[in-house]
Image 1 (cartoon, one colour):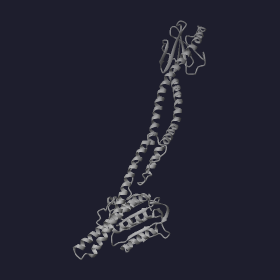
Image 2 (cartoon, rainbow, N blue to C red; image 1 turned 135 degrees about the vertical axis):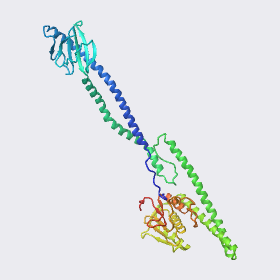
Image 3 (cartoon, rainbow, N blue to C red; image 1 turned 120 degrees about the vertical axis):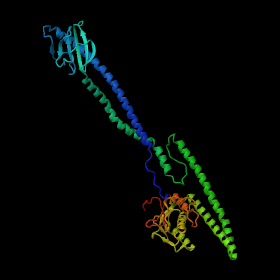
Image 4 (cartoon, rainbow, N blue to C red; image 1 turned 90 degrees about the horizontal axis):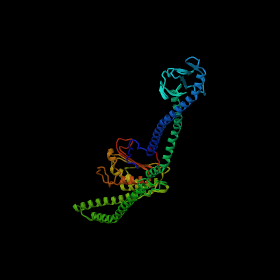
Length: 456
């Protein structure tokens, strides 16, 4: 029920499922990245050790072959360039063979002599972006220096680490999808609980029945059920008291009213009759109030929807005839659909709804202007009247109990509250508008059955 309709707050609340999915995905990505960085450092260290070991083994294999070549060519020039020597090379390793005096005796065909400008002691060295290993033989008579460019090592490291990151790039999107599906599946009971709670109307206080709730959510459901049970008992007690009080008041009020009317008829003209007439008017107001309380109890007690649809046109006609007999026929303008108006609202509840909306328009509208009552084929009811424009801040309070909005006209202040209660019970919408659509003044109450488009 909306009377009047209130706009929903701007913005959407954060989603627990989205927050979990995004948080887990970002956390997984961060841990994977840290793991890969750590693995990169470990791989780099291990590759350096492997490359150094390979460089040393290469030097140890080339050294005896180079020494034999140099011994067999003692009469050769001081420094000779040779081609392939020893096991097949990768094309990245170069070497030189020095004599005891440190001068280069042999060097490979692609050796950069600037890298071997200075003799080096035994072991590993770094010279001109090259890794060099030096090893002596024949009691120090010869020394071989084998060099490998760091660019080759960097390329190998990048290839190795890149091959490690490739599965990460492929697995991370799959992990994100998996996390999203997993969180959606595990949080489905929460969504079901939210849908069940949001789908309840104000009159449905039965226990929640959401299946598959996790252990952490069961106490929440139990607490909500206990709260609704307490609310149900409180509302039942309130409705019972209202109905009983109103019912018990009807008989003594009717009896006193009858005696007062007799007193008015028998009293002579003068102050006594005037006082008796004042008492009669107040007793009639109390009688109307008791009737309204019974209507309110009936509206809030549930059972305002019938199992099968009925034609509301005859019901509205009978209600209108009651107002005609009460002397309001000249003001009432009734419009009924030719083929009837089928609706599942309980006929008694619809009669109470129509009676209160029409009575509200007759009491508070311009007494010189007609009240228009229109019934739609789907059971929608529209009641409009002329009169001063009601401010929006007052319009929003009209469905509250005993709200008269400062009106000095007679009325209990319960008519629109009863109409709103019936509207809630049927899942329909009650829209209050002032000024009335299509005019500059007046007031309109429009009851729209559930499922009817808001623009109708």
